[in-house]
Amino acid sequence: MHTERIKDLSKLVEPDRVRKEVYTDAEIFEREMARIHETVWIYCGHETQVPKAGDYYTVQIGRQPMIMVRGSNGKVNVLYNRCPHRGNMICGDRKGSTGEFFRCSYHAWTFHLDGKLKNIPMKSAYEGTRYGRNNPDCSMKKAARVENYRGFVFASLAEDGPTLKEFLGKAIVAFDDMCDRAPEGEVEVVPNCFRVIQHSNWKLFLENQLDALHPSVVHQSTGRAAHEVEKMIAKKTKSGEAPLAYHMLSAFATVTIDKWDNFQTINYPYGHCILTGYMGLRPQDPDTLAYDKVMIKAYGKKRFEEIVGVNIHHVLVYPGLSVQSPLQQLRAVRPLGVDRTLTEIWHFRLKGAPEAIYRRSLAYYNLVNSPATLINADDLENFWKCHQGLASDGGDWVSLARHHGRDIEKDGVVESGPRMGTSEAPMRNQMKAWAKYMKEGTRTT
Image 1 (tube, rainbow, N blue to C red):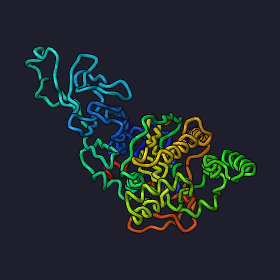
Image 2 (cartoon, rainbow, N blue to C red):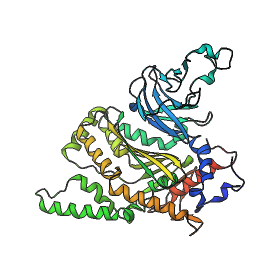
Image 3 (tube, helix red, strand yellow):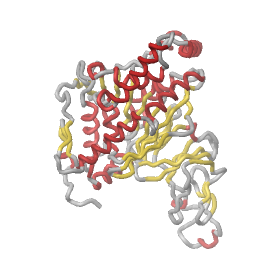
Image 4 (tube, rainbow, N blue to C red):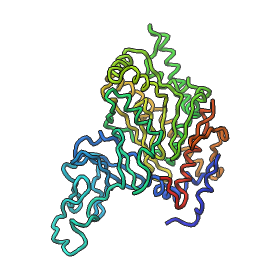
């Protein structure tokens, strides 16, 4: 399947730099799909996307079209989106309800919601052949493993490997933090997500997520413009305060590089990374105080203080998920090709929280992560420009050297050094995991 041109992938990754082919070579991309995305735990969706039996949502895992469906027993199943008869996709729509069973639109084979064969029309025509009710190959194939953690559904297409909790490790805090911030201890998905196709390699997006150096550069113009309007409004109003929405954008200019250096990244096995040190804004306005009151009633004062004191801004679950739990959102990465990547940007509602808290987080979701915002456009332009530059003959290596050699490593966990929050340690950690996944005959799971 692969030519001998790529003999030793480990030579493409060095401790402080990476060869450009890692991002641009189509054969390497195919290997990534087989050895990483179609092997490790991949986020499929949230259980509230499929609330009733028969509700389904289609999702891509590596190169594989899959269906996440609520079964008749209430369990969420993940199936290959393929009829075992002639290979027709069972579900052509992104989401919907299939009712009590799946029916192939090509030859009317039907399947139970767990994928098991229900009926073959005119089954007498198959008598004496290998095809029939007792042949497991006549049922829809299931994902090898499916696990649900606090409503977040993951699947692995590999039979063997760590459990979901073992794979997530400390990165599991992303889901605990989001759910614990809900008075009822659960979240529910906001039905529609933003879907963006970027014309660049999937790894560029993931590396950007914990790149603490870029916000003050890439988003400076947007943040500065918002800050100027913020100051102007403050001068003209009696309260002297601009609406909170302006702060959501102006922070990209007022949180300068030296402030980002005060933060910290913690980098774990399997490529996961956490950005800490960035306490979210907690204004003492009536909406926040009302939320605090509900939370204290639900959890008690001590537990409430522990929950809101979790100091995590961003969690990256390698290789395909970026979670900002204080903002109630996540971004799922679906590679489509070596230079095409789909990102799904999902927002969640905290069950039991006041409506005003939901509206506030929704405002951030729209202001910062909508395809229409300048913030998102800034990033997408740079992702495209990076890929175009990497595809050129202008150089062979990508540098990951910022603060290299100054990381603090203990028991397999790597922390950025003091006042080195803009270190490229997260990128180095991701590429270290990538090289391990890709090594011939080695499976990190």
